[in-house]
Image (cartoon, rainbow, N blue to C red):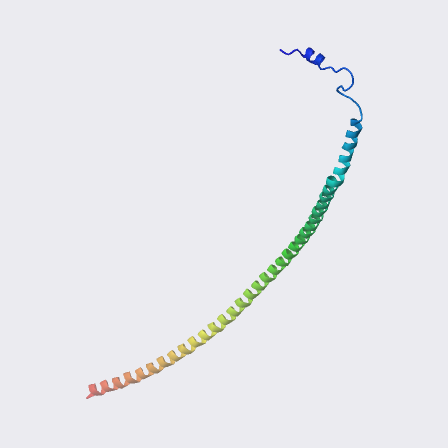
Length: 156
């Protein structure tokens, strides 16, 4: 096995240049770090943040426009539904009125036709009765003449 105590004791540095040697390089690294931070902030982060902010504003404006358009669409939908209901009611009223009118017209025409047929039947019946009376009268005359002929032939 490895003995850690030997390893730690052999890694000790005596004198300057140890593990944390603070000399002129530390301020240079700090300045370099700060310079890179400022440079990245100017070159990368600020443009990226402005683009993100512009995109956020663009999305918000589009969302607000979309919500306005949706509200307008809902308003128009309700308005058109109300108009459609009123038009349907008017159409239903017109249908019932036209049905009533056609029913009345049909009844009037039916009554006129019934009266015409009744009058026609009455005239035909009267004509047939008149022809019957004429035929019976002619038959009576023929019967009387035959009776007279038979009496004369029998009387001889």
